[in-house]
Amino acid sequence: MIQTATRVAVAKYDDLAIRAGYAVKLEDQEIVLFKLTTGEVRAIENRSPHPKGNRLAEGLVSGEYVFCPLYDWKISLIDGKVQAPDKGQVKTFEVEIADGNVYLVF
Ligand code: FES
Image 1 (spheres, protein in one colour):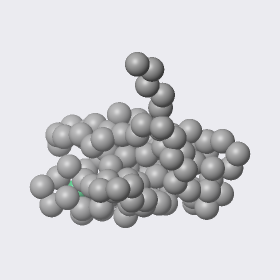
Image 2 (image 1 turned 180 degrees about the vertical axis):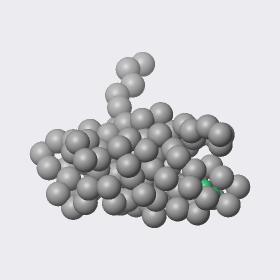
Image 3 (image 1 turned 60 degrees about the vertical axis):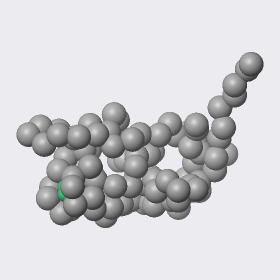
């Protein structure tokens, strides 16, 4: 069986402000998009892995990391890993940009 990837349009590229979280909901998943200063867009689960589980859309982006505003955990927007000394990981999603749209690829 050939399985093809599913692409879901979730935002207009121009609607994303640099370094500001843009939350989207897909079925039961909350995902947040971040446009980096390079213009690239990253998508991760919209929930800090910290036990308090704050929404990462409110986080502060610096380079390729988002800092959770509650306890300042530093989370990679590349692989979703929480940086030491804290531990954990959030899900990351593949992003595609085409024709002015931002797609998530599953
Ligand atoms: S909720 Fe605690 S660091 Fe994000």
